[in-house]
Amino acid sequence: MGVLNNIKRKLSDFSYKRKGSPKREVKAINIKNAQTVGIVYRADNDETKELVERYVKFLKEYKIRCKALGYYDRDELPRYVTPKLEFDYFLKKDLNWKLETQASDVLNFVQDKFDVLIDTTVDEDEIIRFIVKQSVACFKVGAAKKGVNELDFTINLQPEEGVRQLMKGLDNYLHLINKD
Image 1 (cartoon, one colour):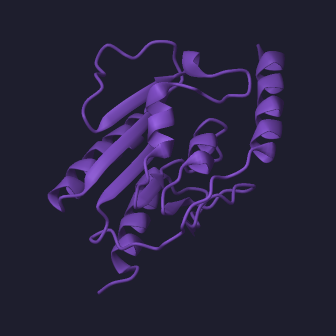
Image 2: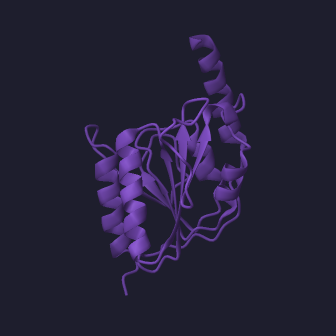
């Protein structure tokens, strides 16, 4: 399967470079002034899933409408996972040869004009990057990654740092940007 996965990655890289970004108005927004926040993440990572769930709960205290989109690298959702109002998921079986998806939850997510889009992936991710690139969100934030320049604001992480440090850093800076 290694050869097949390499072919998919090459097709994905080629398609990603050719795909254009949608027209959008880039605007830095303080998290307290945001009305909508979108979060995209790898749901098969337990630490990331837990941090995203806690952050959504935190944002709801500010009366911010949240939508989280998680990706499972499986053909079926785990039994313990049920989509909720704020949480949607897509699966490996939803991907085409270029590692893109046409799942309705994903298409709705990228068309939603979030005030802030948070990309929680720390390393370059062939699947999540398409969602971030196609999103029409006003302010896209996440970790700085080699070869990815779709984000409006990035945080440089040390090699030993992970999603926990990314979320802390993003929350800190999103509270400082355009402070009233």
